[in-house]
Length: 394
Ligand SMILES: Cc1cc2nc3c(=O)[nH]c(=O)nc-3n(C[C@H](O)[C@H](O)[C@H](O)COP(=O)(O)OP(=O)(O)OC[C@H]3O[C@@H](n4cnc5c(N)ncnc54)[C@H](O)[C@@H]3O)c2cc1C
Image (cartoon, rainbow, N blue to C red; front, side, top):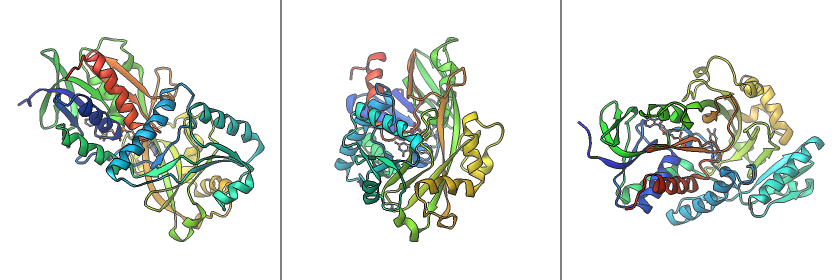
């Protein structure tokens, strides 16, 4: 038995789907709005397994969607948290160069950050670095005082609260398995129900490519057909409580710009723990949170990271470049996260966020980091797109 028809259905109860629904409910309060989430709870996947960093917008190519939505999304996120009483800490971050050869890249990051409008960025020497992070080693560093930490699942639950207060419905344990066209709209089939909706917004994270392919009536060669999600698994260690004082805020290396990874870093969490990692590896199981959940060939850039995943000494060595006092016994295994990284038909890793439209659907096909920081800005951009493309007027 199909439900009452909805106007807009969002697939995916992660932070991007929920931010989009929240913005939709605010801008179009009279629309019938539905969010479908396959798990028993919202925010269990990327949103519930990330580093909890409110990024300031340093890394991204000026003019990219990432750069724009990170800076505006950060501001919107902080306003939202102030309004909702959600704690965050703008503890600041240092990106640390440990060798001369990293200096040009560090300077490039400083230029990028400034071009992106990041406030308060400053190149600092070893003395100032010692004041900010007394145990870090570096010959030079970039200090970003506007970077912060937060509990993103808590933010996602607060978005859900607003959606419900504005009349939107969120249905969990509803995995969309099939999408059919009918009467000018869509029928979404889950394991236990059918939902009718005029329009669809696909925010399915690690499964967004598969959901895009479910939309029937898509003619060959439409944009979403050539993108695939490659899941990268990241493992974390935690610093034992008695050694947490080695890290005050966030200590990062100078990232290699060829890869969309930030390198092995230290992150203080809003709950007072200190995470070290991640060890990014290719995870062929899309929601593989256990080491044994992946098999097969590694992505070519993942090889070094893969090695670290199985060799604690190699991992500790990478950490010691930034924090010489850290020892293997200071680290205990922590959690793992799997990031959805889109690759193009030719196999290139796509750096920027990717949002595509088809007849009566919008698909978010690449929303890796800083997707949680950017979520409100991404939501606004999608609602803007939907308003035009679906001719929404209520
Ligand atoms: C290890 C790691 C660290 C990160 N660190 C940061 C950070 O510090 N700061 C930051 O800003 N960003 C960070 N990110 C990125 C950030 O977490 C993501 O950009 C963000 O969570 C993406 O949200 P999402 O809603 O697109 O995806 P998800 O949170 O993965 O949500 C997608 C949802 O869709 C559901 N779904 C999938 N298929 C279906 C279906 N067929 N039917 C119904 N539901 C379905 C899933 O169950 C899931 O709940 C990190 C990511 C990872 C993995």
